[in-house]
Image (cartoon, rainbow, N blue to C red):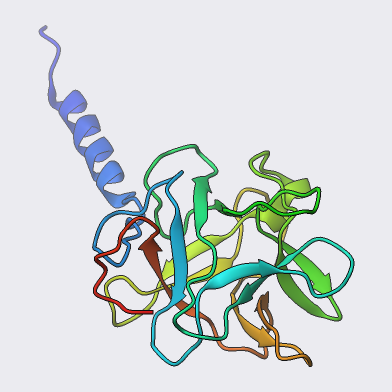
Length: 210
């Protein structure tokens, strides 16, 4: 008796349906409509005018590390950042674990990789994080980009890592203004999410003006 092809065809059909059902997250796009990629510098800017400038690093006291803060004037873009995926792939996608690193030289002996740091009950985004090495010990160093509703290239940055099985906070980052008027990128129930766009640092032809 000759072997039938029906079982093999059935298995191929099931496998195809399974692969189609496991769609990859969408790519993240910059203000020029290009895909955001690892290792390229981007400014993180507010999506709307009148909401301040871009993100930079600043010290709030004599102790390090520095913290990620927002420039108050909307014409100031701050410092660019680079992204790195936990799986080492090139295209940055939504809902994917990322390290974010500010491109800057500082006088402190620290890295410029972003991490969460708890101060007075608010989780601030600071420098001095660890790149890679995903796990429970580095869980505070991982962030995600999520698409905002209504606009093609508007996004939120969130903290909800999946590089570890440990349970943790899952919230979008917002701007927290301290008693001195400093605007911190932070994680708190009391602040609205910070809606952002990503402008390539070498792109001088962007239609958005900041």
